[in-house]
Every structure is written in C-alpha cells, then in structure tokens.
Amino acid sequence: MRFKLRHRAAALTATLALPLAGLVALAAPAPAATTATAATATYAKTQDWGSGFEGKWTVKNTGTTSISSWTVEWDFPSGTKVTSAWDATVTNSGDHWTAKNLGWNGTLAPGASVSFGFNGSGSGSPAGCKLNGGSCDGTSVPGDAAPSAPGTPTASDITDTSVKLSWSAATDDKGIKNYDVLRDGAKVATVTGTSYSDTGLTKGTDYSYTVQARDTADQTGPASGAVKVRTTGTTDPGTPGSKVNLGYFTEWGVYGRNYHVKNLVTSGSASKITHINYAFGNVKNGQCTVDDTFAAYEKAYTADQSVSGTADTWDQPLRGNFNQLRQLKAKYPKIKILYSFGGWTYSGGFGQAAQNAAAFAKSCKSVVEDPRWADVFDGIDIDWEYPNACGLTCDTSGPAALKTLTQALRAEFGKDYLITAAITADGSSGGKLDAADYGGAAQYLDWYNVMTYDYFGAWATTGPTAPHSPLTSYSGIPTAGFNSADAIAKLKAKGVPAGKLLLGIGFYGRGWTGVTQSAPGGTATGAAPGTYEAGIEDYKVLKNSCPVTGTIAGTAYAHCGTQWWSYDTPSTIAGKMTWAKNQGLGGAFFWEFSGDTSNGELVTAISNGLK
Image (cartoon, rainbow, N blue to C red; front, side, top):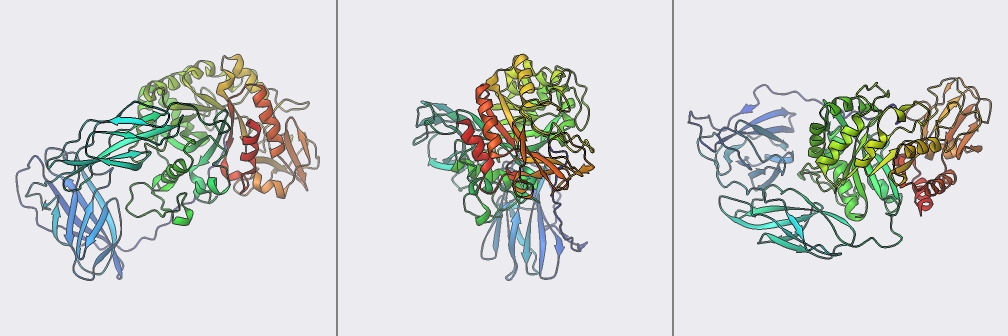
C-alpha cells in the first residue's frame, strides 16, 4: 500500500544545431590485418555554438582480444581547450590533452566500442592522436595496458578492531608497482605486497574491502571483487541496533521535494536510525535494474549540498544519491542500506521474475554489487505489491511464488547480506495475507516491513472517513481486519517470528473534503487537496495546516473547515512503539523521510519509543 503516484521532475536539455560535417578521423585508417590487440580512436564535433563546442571520442577494439584499459592523447592548437568532460578522466599539460578510462568503462571486448565526451572552448581541432601510445588508426598495436584486477581479498585473523586481508596478484605487461586497499570505497593504504592488516576498526561493525593494482607507469587497473567483513564483539550499549528503526529514502525526492541525503544529517535523523531502504529499483523483464540513473549515480552535488562538505568533480566515477549514501555511511558507520526493488509502480515485473527466480536473483546481485557502488549496499528489499493478488496490476503467479523468489535471493546473496520484504498488512479473512505463503518465505528473510498504513483513504470518494493507519480495530471500522493488530496476529499465526516483523508508520496523512462530522465515519465529497496528490499530505504540513482534534484506535485525526485528515504524531507513535515492544516485534519502519519536519521529530519519536 505505497503511494499510488510518483512525482519526478523531467530534466530539460536545450538542443543546439549539429553540424553535419562533424566527424573527423585524425588519420585515415590504413588497410591492415587485424592484430590480436588493435584499436582505433575517432573524433566527432557533435555540437558547435560559436563560443564553444561539444566533442566526442569513440574508442573501438578492432583486434581479437580484449583491451583492459585505454588512454587517448591529442594536441589542441593554442586557445582551444576542454572545459568539462564525462565518462573519462581528462587532464592536460599545456596544449597536450590526455583522457583515461574510468573504472567501469575500460574493458573492451573484440568489436566493442565506448565513447566519452567533453565541452570545449575555441575553434581548433585535435591533432597528433595517440591511443595507448600507438596510432589511433589501428595500424599499430596499443601498448602499456593497465593492470588486471587483483583477486577478491580473503579475510583472516578478524578481531574486535582489526582484520588481515590477502589477495592474488594482478598481472601487467610492464609489472605491478603497488596496490591500493579500499575500505568502504575509500583508500586506507598502499602496499607493495599482496596482504595488508587493517587496524583501528570498530567492534561489531561491517566493512567492505576491495583492492586495485597500479603498474610501473602509474596506471590503475579495475577494482577487485569485494569481501565483506564484520569485526567481532558487540556494539556499545545505548547505540542503535537493539531494535530496527528503518526509513525509506525515495530516489525521486531529489527533484520536486528537494530532499537529499544530507537532509538526514541536518535533521538529526541519521544518528537515530539503523537502516535505510533506497526506493526504488525497477523490475523489468524479470530482472532488477536501476530506475533513474541520473538521480542514482550521475547528479553532481556542490560542497554545501554534500554530506562530506566536498563538491563532486566532473570526472569522479560515482556521484548522485549513491555517492551521498556512501558518504553518509562513512559518517555514520552503523547505518545499513538496502536497495529496495518494486513498490506500487514497479511490482508488475515480479510475476515474470518468479518464473526464473535464480536468474532474477543473479540480476539483483549484479546491480547491488556493481563495482561502482558495491560498498554502499548491505542488502536488498523486495517490495512486491502484491504476490498472487492485485495492486496496480493483478498477479496470478500462485501462492508459492514469494517463497520461491526469497529462497532464490538467499541462495544467491548468501548469509551475510540482509534480505527483507515489504508486505501487505491486510489482516482480513481471505485477504491479501492469505494469498501467498508469507510463513514459508519468512525463513529466507531477515524481516518483513509490514505496511500497516493506507488502510482507508479518499479513493473511497464519499467516505466514510476513517484513519488510514489504525493500530487496533474500533467500533464502526469500515473493513474488519484492516488494522495493525489483526495483520500482526495473522502473520504470527502463519509462523512468522515476532522478531521478524516491523511495524509500519506513515509520515503523511490521508484526507477528504466536504466533511461536516468531526468524528470518524462521516461522509465526504472527494479527496482533500494535497501538495503533490489529492488526498495525501506530509505530516510536516498537516501538523500546522490541520492540527489534531482527536484520536482513535491508536492514531490521530483532524477536522478543519470541511477537511478531515488522519495521521500519526509523536504522541501516537510513542503509543505504537510501546505496543510493538510488548508484541516482541523487531522494530519499526516508516515511509518516508521527506514527510518529517526539518528537525526529524517523527524519527525521534520512533527512536525514543523503541528504547
């Protein structure tokens, strides 16, 4: 029961006139036999607006073996220069320019090509092109390739504060100079051997390590696979961890809502939560995929917008939300981040995914463990709305599909990853909780996020008015079983351990207009106006625009003018957290951060209530 509409801003780009005669080969390709390692580099001026231009280089592997890295060099006449670039690291020495591949686009299979672009000023054209030190026309063999990736490190001698790492050597045509050891994406040491002992760690804490090799020409190769390490011991008493306090961070919130990862810091919320679900990855053709690549890993942040206080550069391999989350974890190392896939809008792909669950799980792991952000995510969350039932679309994959999917995910990800699922809270007889094997699937999951909200709302245009997140039933409730207590009881009866259930809290309200009755059960004429969608509004707005006038079934409601709203407050959240602890639940989660006040009063209420 997630928001039914998602609001994202479209990025508008001005298109300039493109000259038709923009493609320039710096040397006419000579008819030569294909060698084992051969490649070409060609240049095109793709846009020209008088005072500047956009250029693009394309590197193509014309040989019969893979190329592990590439470096393109050229000269510009005086007065012409690169002002910004993308998909390559571009530097210069006077009028001589050098572009090197990034960590993710250096390997080219035979016949494959890759392009990088730049904006420039001046009117000159490049000359003297070299590719990996050889000719750009493919007549000479590119040499001095970057080193290969070292082997994935193995961890040993793990203590409360240290770990020893060992890895197999990388290879290089000119020899290996040294290795960079990266902890959670940040370099912590440079060593000449193939082992390193990292010290000064925090007990009971998860870390991720990778290694990169550097050759005698100072070329850095791709990173190794990641090894996850948890130091021994337990976290200090009083720190978050005894109960889960998880919040959803929405990918599209960086647009109209103007809500960014740094807001978790400035609001004080980051110090009070234990986990974040990043929402949402898409499910297409039965596979996990990144949804909005710009928001996820391309958007540049200035120093004042950034968690670390450091501005993104045009040539860094990872930007956007993922890089900001990486910085957040560096600042608050106890926070665990899960990549959530699906949601109301993207759940239609899960049925196809269940038909080949192993392939689905493998695709999800490749996204979560992408080398560019492998250190960011600690697990995966599946938000399927709803298995063998109807949400935005109706699923008919059968009652066993959820168990099949979760079993495949656990087999693929292993025991060291968090695997969770957001599920329906329909506690009615024969309802959505009875449509799938939630008890059987639980054995493969760390917990369920039980969506105990959105029970009632203005999709019932004329009412009756009812709280969208009742903790318990009450006299006159429109639908029996539509409350948190009944949903939790049903899940327990199906064999789900109480410790694997998180109670859901909405950081928003749902409301009607045309209402004259203050108490629940009144009639209405339609949905109340909302900032982003009719019938729904953030708590941070409602607490002032329509203050609470009463409580029922453990939650609050408000009647102001002709509008009637229901929403949770710090006081009702405190009551719900007491109930959750008495039920032995694993904690709570909420949808979603941007609905809270600028000082995080709802997050604080959950944190205080779970202690």
